[in-house]
Image (cartoon, rainbow, N blue to C red; front, side, top):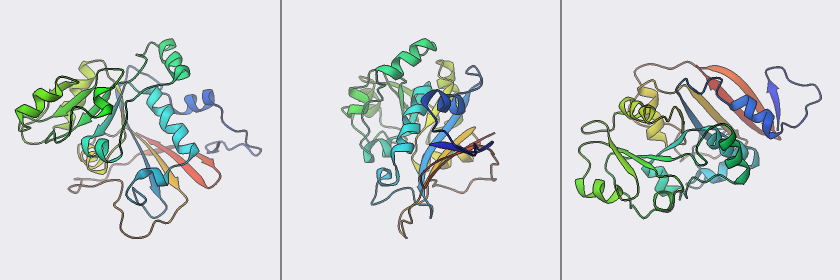
Length: 247
């Protein structure tokens, strides 16, 4: 993997992990940031044969794990949690050591977002998590489901009939979780965009034409206005591009 924007090297040297950390690390960890990370096909598909895995590759996975290492918490919608078969958010020895050296918990907690709480507390991503996870929901969610999930996670109610994402972000900030990484899915990204909460956007462009059928990386009601971000860098590995945009 090498950088092609800005300041491309005419004889590019592969980026090692410290160089990648410099490219993706927050300039100021005390400044709250909500980062989004997605992979897409050339023609805009969010999945291949129903899953994002088919669009990914070694470079994308490398950045995926690095972004988790840099985060205070990993935010994901419950539908994506179930469909993609999420396991516990767990760092390897090297990443745990890096986090300790930088004053972070060894493992970032998972934050699951769900309006209906229609998922099982026994999901490994929750029940086997090395750091107690959070579940963000709204007041209309079934009380029985809230109680069941409270055995494995801290349940936070934000909003009445739908999850108030701005309030959810504020609640996580109150708990010291300032650097948030959202991994989807599309409806969560649509909600975050509509609420103007996205500060940093990492997008991997996979060199594949998926054809018709798959959805986009964002979904839900139209946003009230487009949100403009600036291009921070472009990385490349073979035919795959990794883009980072920021406010």
